[in-house]
Length: 92
Image (cartoon, rainbow, N blue to C red; front, side):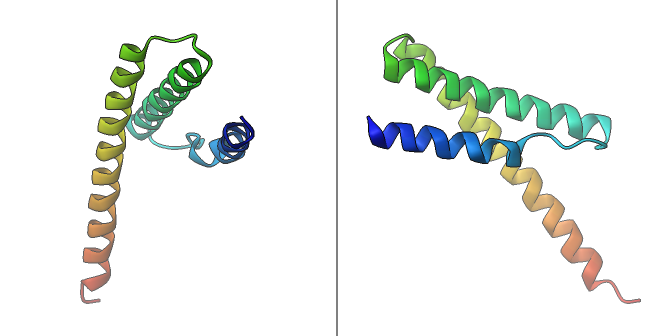
């Protein structure tokens, strides 16, 4: 019980770091908002499963969606880093 409370508190402190930033282009902002929504849904389902108020099938489904969203975000990040590194290699 204490460990799960500690983990929940740590997650609440870290949540603002992944919130969508203001001033991003429309497509990027929408994608960040969707990503945050998927992650919040999996958080709610996990909390519900721990307290017995959620269906385990819904939890598995939300975890799968979160995994796909995270893989997509990582792939986009990798492409951005790759493009930045390519720009750095260009002769001036």
